[in-house]
Image (cartoon, rainbow, N blue to C red; front, side, top):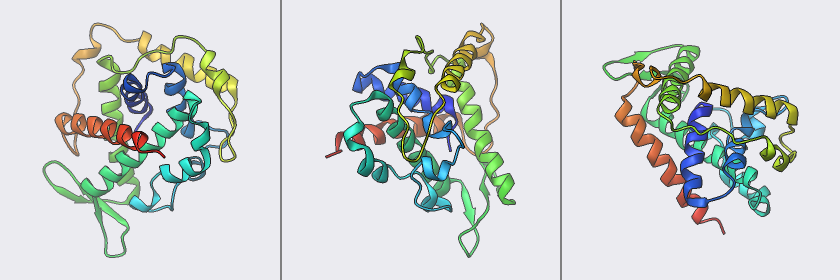
Length: 219
């Protein structure tokens, strides 16, 4: 799944259209990953466990929480699930190699296909997203939280419970990542192995379009 700076940067872009409380939307956009116990299969409303079938399911979330989307934290939660759905489906269809039983068997790298054990497949996928995460942070795509008030909008869900003090600590650390940026941050080099910066940018904006279209069609 995409890393948190990707989630927050996408939430910011989506909220440019929605015009809700940005802090609340950004907080919601990481909440499925930081619930107590961190049972991601449950908190992401996943269909199953393997490949595209195991991605987050926004339809299940809407079935349960459509009435709660007036809470900007809950809208952010939906944005997280939609982002995971898009990014993981993209990765599973564009990058992954499967064996005859449908199990992960390797990856399509930029210059050569490689058969790899599952832990290496996961490593390289997370590495690619992690590098793009750093690029977004270093180039100002991730805004800082203005204060802790957004935590007041957090509610426990049947599938996810929250420690509000831990969420405040998360906000503090997220802001610290921004405060640490300096004049050299934009000069960092990124060695993408699976794809290119241009393609990751394309994926980023396609995801935003997908989310806005999904939200527009909620009935």
